[in-house]
Length: 192
Image (cartoon, rainbow, N blue to C red; front, side, top):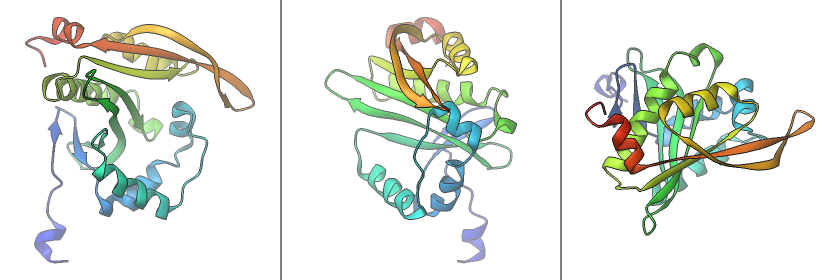
């Protein structure tokens, strides 16, 4: 690798004030692998499986070819430090809807507004570029902080999936929330 390549800054696909979102590539396998093993992130996202580096490599490769998913890494703007990932997945171009998921890796990166900023960037992309009509997400009932953030951002609760996940010796519910493009534009028009 040349000196120019080593100092090359990552592409900032969607840029906010404190964070930016960038495409994931094969060179991110090691970093992405480590993101998946922060215990608090695993609890909050309900991640139950373990993954090998080879599985992560294959996952990244498959997402690059998947037209129904936009998978981006979240990085701190000031340091380029990877702090999580965010995705629009199960994109349905006929009915114009998708599912959003986000994970911030460590408690030291949580509670700083990074997740809210990443979600706002992804909502703007989903509604403003992909022309989606509806974006939904699921949040486990034990993730109070995320529920608060989603409501604050304008997501509306639609329903409850009862006892859908078994984690830490007990079953937990999942809350289905969504936002429509018209709701997004009413909340953020001129501020996006």
